[in-house]
Amino acid sequence: MIDLVINISLLTFLAITAVAIVRMTNLFAIIMLFGMFSLLTAALFVVMDAVDVAFTEAAVGAGISTVLMITTLALTKDQDEKHPGCHRPWLPLAVVIVTGAALVYGTLDIPAFGDPDAPAQTHVAPYYLEKSIPETGVPNVVTSVLASYRGFDTLGEIVVVFTAGIAVLLLIGGRHSTSKNKKNKREENDA
Amino acid sequence: MTHNLILRVIAKFLIPLIIVFALYVQFHGDFGPGGGFQAGVILSAAIILYTLVFGLDAAEQIIPPTILRLFASMGVLLYIGVGVITIFLGGNYLDYSVLGSTQIAGQHLGILLVELGVGISVFSVMLIIFFSFAGRGKT
Image 1 (cartoon, each protein chain N blue to C red):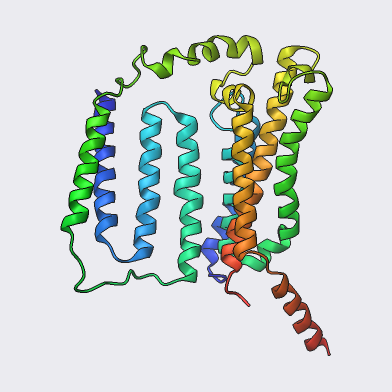
Image 2 (image 1 turned 90 degrees about the horizontal axis):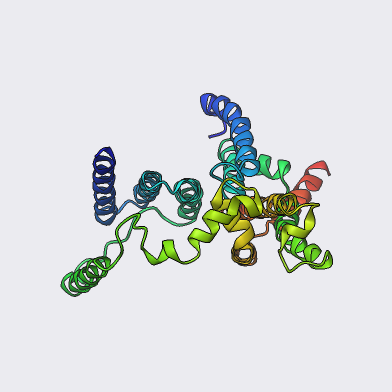
């Protein structure tokens, strides 16, 4: 019962935040609302007992990505430009409604939350749950699955993160010239 | 921003706590929620808070960008290296069981090392991205 109340209020807040994001034009406020959206999502994950995912969502979605968006905003401008005259909402609205209806129709086939007969629970999950302690001795099954049973996946993920870092460095990173400039300036000042 | 007394005092109080929490999440990930990815992000959040309050130059003096690039590669290499070591010890790639005297000890050590690699790499990459964006446009 209490779960239901929490779920409904969290989802209501999510919907309100989403509508507010759509209706706003101040990008700074939108980024803040994005952070709130992620935090609410993290709370929803906690209600669903997915603590590890909630942890990541709160740290990455609400924390780091908000900061990164703000630093990006500092490099651009913080107001969305209005495009007067050319705003025709009907076609996009129709596309959104049809897509949304298709998605809602799709959810009807999804097994109920926590259904023990769901494909996700019957494939390899029972093996992990039964063998995690005797095979790895790690009480947190999420960790043993991530790092041991699915070690290759995690290796792939970390390489993706690494590649993202390299890409950002290549595109906009590096303050080599800056530090050199500073040294030059300092030398000039000394001289 | 630099002359905000309350902000500076609170940040100085909070940053050590955030770092300790990150280490807890890193090394307690076997027993509770968390792991390398979350710990790396939390640790980088501590440095980002420091950067926001004290400025980019002060932060880059603590952690120079060259060190960050080194760490980012070291984390990935640690992960890959654990896999290579398990091959040399006679197991499959990333089969940690051969690392220790017993299967459980080996798995424990392997997971710890791999999570450490993930943590170091995520921490460095997050800071690399943040520093790149924050340093952009400054002459």
